[in-house]
Image (cartoon, rainbow, N blue to C red; front, side, top):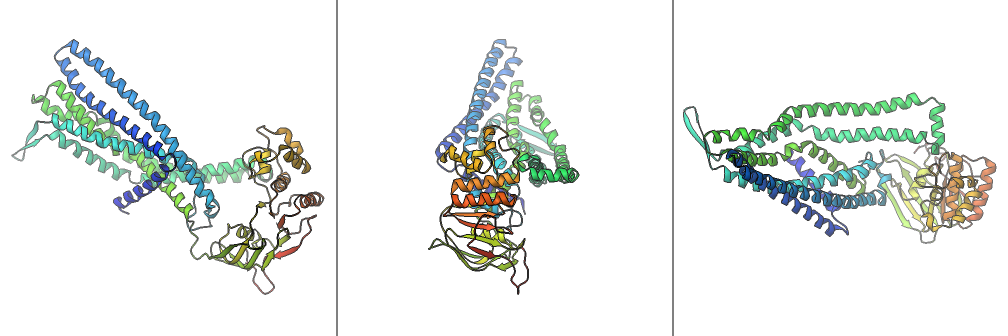
Length: 585
């Protein structure tokens, strides 16, 4: 892809993201903040122009040994510096307020897309044509980095353009002399040579900087992915070590899995090291030019102006003023060079964040994956499965699901061998699994699914028992009574402590899931191996209690056997028939 095409794609991505960040109820407030910061930056440009004039006045006073004039210019200098500092501090304060305003808006939109379209489920690796890697990083970090870069680069770019015009005007007014020299016997005079030398000098430097730094954008993109993969592996190990998921930690510890975990972590970190070394090489190659340029860009103007000084065309003050004006022009034109690495990182952020939002808006299936499931609202309150046949995301068909009309309040066991698509059928009923064909008419009302291990997010025991409801909507005494009935009353003593949920076994988490069902009272309750960790006596006791608590609730149970204590109305077999080949999900 050509440089212009890359630039156009980057600007399009940044424009889409900027419009999202600046939209919403606070758009006028954000616009006012942006305009104010820009105005303060313009004030800083004016002060810089005044400092250029100050250079001449001060050094002319020194050359003339005029102490009173030099002292007066010292006071002028302090006034200008004080005004510059005040403008900068005010602009920085307002810019930070704008940053959090736009970041909050962009983060909210990203979360709405990620959760509202269920993209968090659809865009997992292996489920779509464009899976999203490390979405947590893209939402948490890239939203912040994008807004930071957007404000930094746009404000600087606009300010630099205004400053460039202003400094060029000053330089033009000061460069009334020309440069005369002889080349191959030909007399050559370049009028106002300082004006033309500045952009030529920076243009050559900019081209060389871009040529040497071109690989950095891809390397910075890869660095974020490698760092996120390594961090994710560490989080997985931390979670296995956490007593909330004690069984997984036990399997690592008792199986002496530390060496395997170390190999896995070393493998992820090896990617970080390889990428880092590639970045080191690329930055070294670029730095061979940019570092000397940084060191000389403020000194070279004086060298360029020396011919005019030695020719008597300018005074010492005029030389310093001319050098200052030339330095301001070259520094302003060198913005691209000074910011190249940050710009490369910003381009990578735009690509990652825009990729997340675009994918979340319309998750693309794998090529050839059938998506012909028709979804209707049930007209009679029953769950209807008509001609349903599910497929994998790659397009491989599973065995047909028997037609059923499951009435409200029914208790149905979905049975079948492992890997035959029982949980997949639940995902299709819930509207998550889109691959397949047939018709699913789902009734309204509240649905609740309890997997083998009830998910526990941050929060306390009360929050976990009421999830996804707000605990404030439930009577604390009722919550405590349900938890006590399910054998979790001893956990209430730790309420409010940091270790409130620590040490929960799989069986305790499954009982916590049953507490959710009793508290939320769903119309349809889906149990996916939700009592597998209980002994038969406990299972019979708790299921009989739950049925009594939820007499009107329909139960859809996925299990290898019917839960003890739960009378069934029907069995829905999932898997191969006698004349079909066994297909696994």
